[in-house]
Length: 128
Image (cartoon, rainbow, N blue to C red; front, side, top):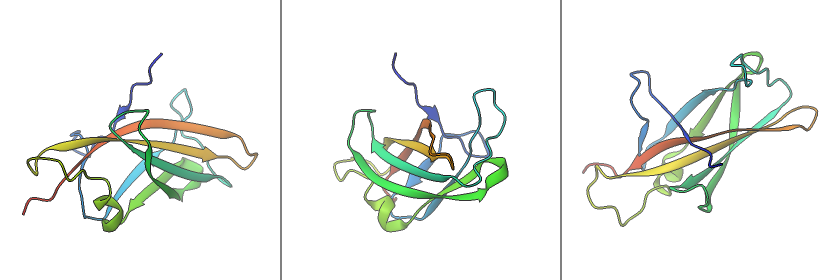
C-alpha cells in the first residue's frame, strides 16, 4: 500500500510553500496513533528531505530541535543556503512549485525508532 503524504498547512490552513533562498522553520507536534502527544524526552529527532517522489534520493538530512519535549513539539530549521538547494533550476515561472517530502524520525531514549510522515510541502523560486 502506498503511503500518502500528509500536507503541511500554515495557520490559515493553506499549503506550506517555501521560497528558496530564505530561512524557514516548520514546527511539528509528534503524536501517537490515537492522536495524543508523544513525550520525546531523551530522544533525538531527525528529518530527511526528498524531492517529488517517495523513491527520490535524499536531498538533505537535518537535526530537528526538540522545542517542548513533554508535548512532542519539535522544530525543523532550514537556513537560506539549504533552502536554495531544494529548488530545481529548470522551473519555469517563479510561481511554479516543486513538491518535497519531509520524513521525520524519532530515536527514542530506549533506541526504538518511530517514523512520522512523510509530510509534503512546496518550494518555489523567489520572485525577482
